[in-house]
Image (cartoon, rainbow, N blue to C red):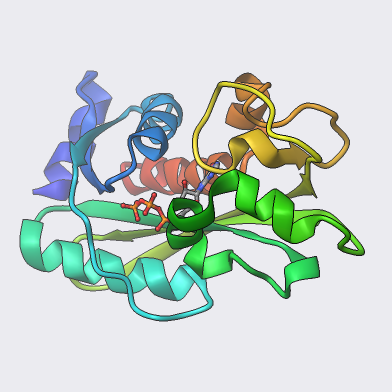
Length: 198
Ligand code: ITT
């Protein structure tokens, strides 16, 4: 079924894949990028239990298989997190939980007086049609700002400044669209989907 849908791209019809996520911000970023590759994504707002791991790849892989057991359709999930070396990689795989508990204010508090403010966003997309799981990863380096700035984006965007810049992702959403961890992984995923139809 998936292959038939892929072939339809040649006749101007979009390929459709479900994106299982509870995060609307992730969904709209993915939609913008994958549309450029002729892929139409359908939002499946599932909240999937995540396995305990430090690795976004492992978490995404487990979630993809769990989601497939529910949906039984070609789908992808995405796990991401903010890794801060001065905090030994925290919040990392616990990013969603930490944001809910202490917010960006809490991250700034944890870093007051820290030796460095460097940080990295990592993202892993896991795609499955039921059997194997394919992974596509992306990352972006930068630093945690001194204050919360900007209204765009979501999550940690108001405190993350990408390398070489001065504005947070929340202050420069179009910059985020081109160089974020998610953009990197989505571009690789889009390329893969394009080659599948050739
Ligand atoms: P899922 O249903 O897709 O799991 P989630 O929001 O729980 O949605 P994760 O488990 O991957 O997502 O947790 C990632 C956390 O890191 C979450 O709090 C996000 O808000 C945050 N995050 C991820 N990508 C981000 C980005 O591009 N900008 C800012 N914060 C981000």
